[in-house]
Length: 319
Image (cartoon, rainbow, N blue to C red; front, side):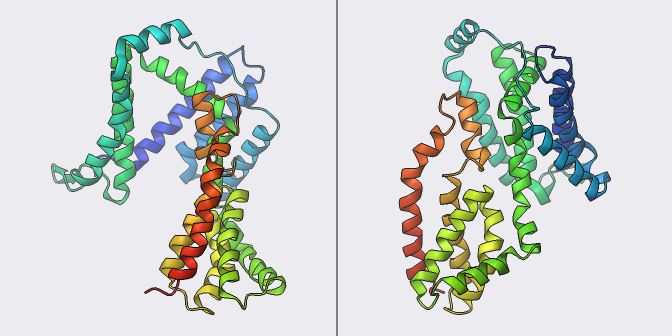
């Protein structure tokens, strides 16, 4: 294969390393040393993470959490354009500004569908195992090139904007990756069994509706706590979904899993722990209220959770 996913991991690691160097050289940053260390450690995970023992990577992540928790990642000076320059450029470009953003989904779709079997010299053009991610990486590179061409900026200016955004988001950049494996850790620690013991000991599960409510609400609550529905699912499925809904009440596992995940997504809409959904947009849009996205989503999340409860109750026996 010609274009591999590893290439984009290395590119991202190089960008994080560049961000670390720029932070280190930024004397306007009051904590430039800790900020640079944070991004350098994160860069190491992408650049040499596979060559490091798992314990070392774990220590790196703990160190990053300590740096972020102590307020070590702060904003500096980024050399961005002035407000007048941005306004003038926006008026000149008009709707052409949407081209880089549209390139990403269009090229990703083309790569994932039309180019998945394309070969050059007997080699596949794109890595088929991770075809969507590889296509997304190619689309992102093309979008950056288009943005530089349209705005008459340099890749260096793009790196300044990249560093400004990553510093503004801060620790939330790492949070989705940490939460992605949290469910597995909870499962290994026996949290699912503990949930099953608590629910069966203190909640009457003789009612099928009560069991459905516990499962759906539990999926939402664990997602609110852990920020990731995939982390919540092993806990609630192992504690309530499989032993009670599937084995005791004969629920279809596919229906249980699908509606359970929809319930988890209701929790995603209501938690700052889902940083990529609820924190990053606030930073990108520079909203004054850091919980603005969550407040706007709660009126949708709660009715949807109720709807999921009744859907699972009536459909769980469908084959």
